[in-house]
Image (cartoon, rainbow, N blue to C red; front, side):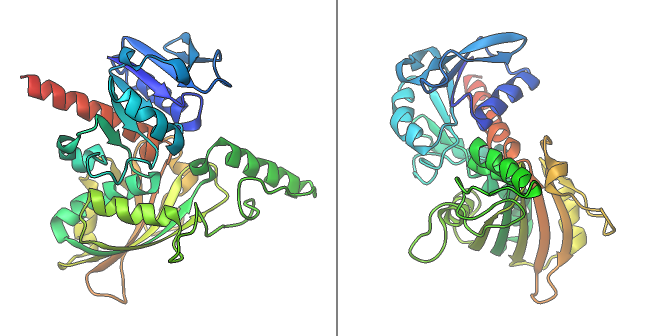
Length: 336
């Protein structure tokens, strides 16, 4: 396999490089691509310094699989060009709702790779990815009727500059210095901002709409979903408070039993001080953690839970690499 990574110098791009190395992913050549500003810089891979190439003049016929992690505008422009020669795994939102592009979380819906018609596979929103990996087996068993979701999303979900702004604002506040707001609508340090992405005419933000539409596409279009997405002063890992209403009768014990066996999930729910997972503890971990599992005492057949995952891993880079593995396995199976 020859692999290319568009946006290799960004948060997710670097994570993809790291995961390919940690997984000992079989690759003959790794091409690291970015804008002209980053051309010539180097990133270490398997004890070698690989030079970053200019995306604008790269020959995509050199790559069997190309990861795109540079935002929607770059994917819009370059992914269709690259897809003429290479299978594309796109981390942006641009292709996610295209009916001819599968939206994949491998533990949930690898079978949807069969609908790929444009040589492009979409990676879901980071908040969606960690959500559906928890809901998948529960939906199979009890049939989810309705979801009420509140997210608590780290600054890394917005990129490196917002992360740097959080660090800078925090330092300035502690030093009694002036606060500058550059990447957020309000101060992010020691605050919570109920606004991620642009507002639509109905009052929901694009981030909330993404979660709703993507979850419906991956799991089931009949599930009723409402969401509120909030940015919090955390560097890495997204948390979600989720209320799930099922069609069939459920119990906490049954829910836990299924989640214990669900791929990619880890239940940490001790019901005592510290017996749950917080964002900082999920950082650098591959699993999606579930805590605070309890019955909704106001609604029949409903459960509340707390879900936490490293958004750069599960929600982006790790899921993208796992999509590549699922695609390769599918092709190897078809060759038998």
